Image 1 (spheres, helix red, strand yellow):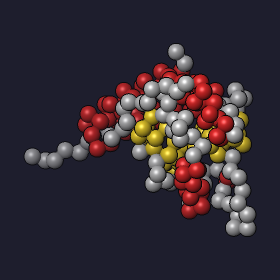
Image 2 (cartoon, rainbow, N blue to C red):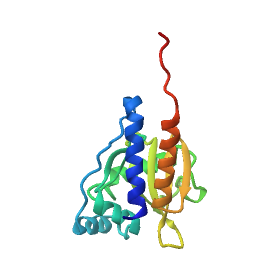
Image 3 (cartoon, one colour):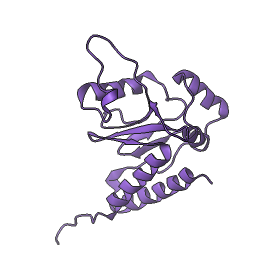
Image 4 (cartoon, rainbow, N blue to C red):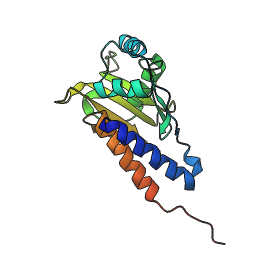
Length: 182
């Protein structure tokens, strides 16, 4: 079992526990069934570059995960590289300070092709996850940029990103829900 797969199991357990006391959190506890190799290859052809090894493996187990974290869905093979998700990411960068200065908003004089591959988005643009093609780690994994409620964070890869989601959920789950006096 790969390390990220174990982390995903822990994430699902944390989400389940949080929803016991706060069902309004509405996590998607059930990921989609895995994608075929040809579906993954078609997504990579649409994007124009190979996906990081870890996300290719993720897709072979789970072809996306609805409402994974803070309303953002981890995109499956049918949605990776789709224009509407890229547009949401670009809109976030046009309207807010970006998590990485080098990937800032495009100049008004020209439109630059961004090195980002969105892999998790909510269509309101408050939460997004993207691979950064300009940052390749020593293990060949692409850096991940997470944008959650106007906070931008960069991680060395998909594994580190998932570790942090688990940590965020653990902190969220440790909060004591308010109860009405009665």
